[in-house]
Image (cartoon, rainbow over all chains, first blue to last red; front, top):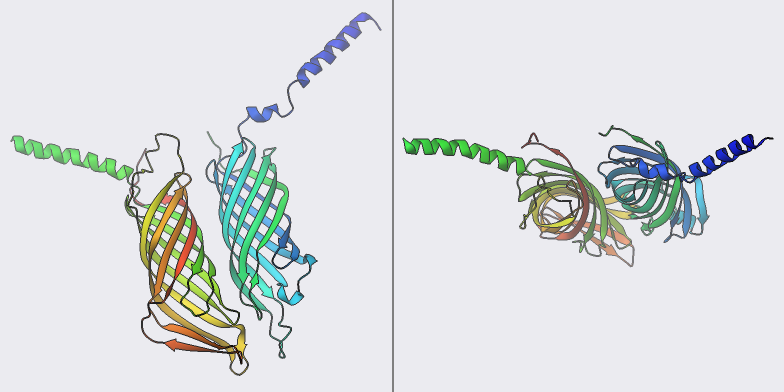
Length: 208
Length: 225
């Protein structure tokens, strides 16, 4: 091999090194944030949740839809549904825990942080729908009872928007409420849990 | 002639002034929100604190006067032998004694701020008290219910986090004016009975409400800017 191909080879190698000095994530700071007013985002995931006063941990099927109203403010609705056979750790007496449980929440979120990495807080009033188990102490069996229970949920989380359509999110959830329509004492649904995963988003309006 | 000219001049000037005021006035602002409520010091003997959920819309009439139109669903326990459910639907007038902020004059960057208010209003309510297991050995389904009216008054504050979004915390006392239901529980025999009293009673409860509200429209007083 002559000297010329070697020089060309070295030149090409050097040029790639110079190119690699540009950090792979540098374009993130150049472009505007994916998180903008009119962003619609949604996801569904499994959320392990601990009912800490009932010493019971369950798996929720968790889904949410969120719309960004202002640079810092969003409106959000979400649902938690106890997965079939979703009681992961169950140390309470079975008759004192709902055999079916779902909850719907709607509220607002506050977001702050850098362009595509956001920290967010949410406050969401809602309703939990619970079906209690049969009264084990009754001579005449009492039918299973559904009830709608006032509840609320507070969330703190973070999201990283890494493309036009996808982001990662991780959230810590705290909820509370009471199931009062029970044959026994009322049941606290105080709970904490985590939800994380891949979310999808879309800018619904073109901004100037 | 000069007087007539002066009067005409005033007639010309006032409409411009009125247009300016109208443009700056937040009257007609409609907000939508959700709320969560804690019910304390309830009228019922042995009744414990309750929790509730609801929604509201807020319609503003002037700089100093706003109105809340709300619905609440509240549940509470009466020890461990009965539970009570309340549905409230009503309205409150909010008066802002300190009124130094204009929604349309954001000359500098918005900063979160508190805006306190005095509130008073009226609501209709439906209450149902039900035995814990929902039945009585002899009589089957065991509950008592009432429709009544109530008045409420209290204090609160908005925490305005953006020109359009606010958190509001309200503490108020609600007095029920209709019939009154009393529960009587015999702890020895485990028997629950209900007694209904006709006529007005000043019994009530303290309601602490946290609401989240977003301004969605201006129904009148539009400006083309």
